[in-house]
Length: 184
Image (cartoon, rainbow, N blue to C red; front, side, top):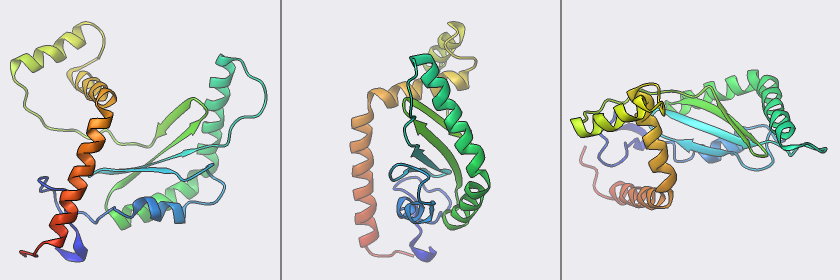
């Protein structure tokens, strides 16, 4: 494995460049003034998502008007930064071997754009398929794929702290592996 590239423990995915420094790279690469603070950088095997908070709106708005104004501000930022975001994404994709997605937050409005929907193969037994089919029949989801995505989001929301601890533990295991002998 060249350049210290390693997959996450147990995932035996094709070798990808490490993206451990992605948040720092984006902090140095993003133009000053785009966001009110450091962008949130989320990395997985296929994609890096960069989400930044835009400066707050000025003026008085009722709740419905505020949401529309926030969405409009995000849309304007997206259009004004398109060419530069494309160039930054191209550089990051070359560096990290992953696609780059973008998002912005303005007040209570959160929008993601240019993000991937990656197919995930799975085998489900009949009881699990019946759960998905019930969600489709009830109109909660349009398809089994939508129902599965809905269920994953729900679990993620309700198990966020546990999943965070699990990710921390996996990171520690990866650190220990990298300190061990190189078997290649």
